Length: 290
Image 1 (cartoon, helix red, strand yellow):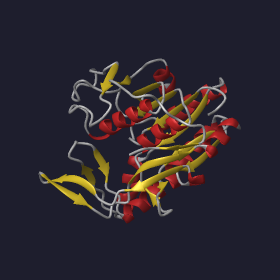
Image 2: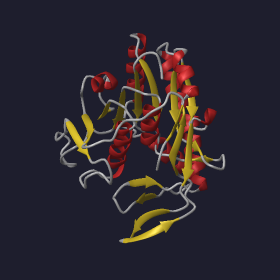
Image 3: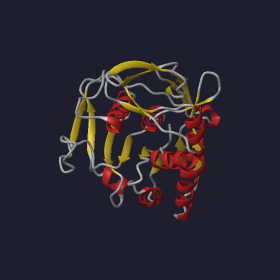
Image 4: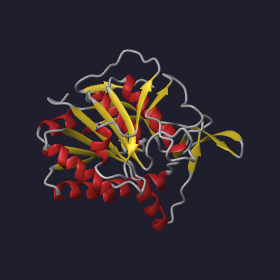
């Protein structure tokens, strides 16, 4: 655990999200004394690069309506190239431009994120539930905090993304929101901010003004039916962070000026677990039960 309160910020990969604005806001907060770890995805860049390379993209929709990226071997290569080769260097350069030292990492560095690869994934195809194999995605099972803690204590902003490393020491794609949640819990972060291309959790998905100031999620099972796609995964990530000991989780707009400061001040949706168990986290290595 770091010596001062830690905030984990997840910068969404939606092209509408203002990554430069997020970095500028993080820089200002760091200069004011805040300790911040930045996690990022890169769905926009993954899609753009896949198109250039001619790699077909598929989305798997589970029976509980949660959607994830289908990661075949070619797509896994695109994910690594896009995140580690394009999105991450741009974020590190932007932070450097604001005189903030940062270090770009994937979950594989230092064995930071360990995951169990899913041998098969249930997906709904043409109204039928089928098993999809050859999917190089997994669920995080352990976080080793030694590397990010060392960097945070030295005054750096760690910039972290998938992939993780699987049980066979091979790269495996993991959801970036859930990676942020796992890191926040293992590091004992006070706050997790999930910045996305929406103003928060909406009561009506067709009405962007219907932002819920708070949202309750049950301690188990899928989110309510109104949350679909990426928002459903964000709510699952929020639940995992909260049950792991993170005090505050907010899903907020990453397109606005000073998005991190606004989320810290209460903008967006604050997520609560309706009845959570006792929080648990350790200072270095945390095993995640699945």
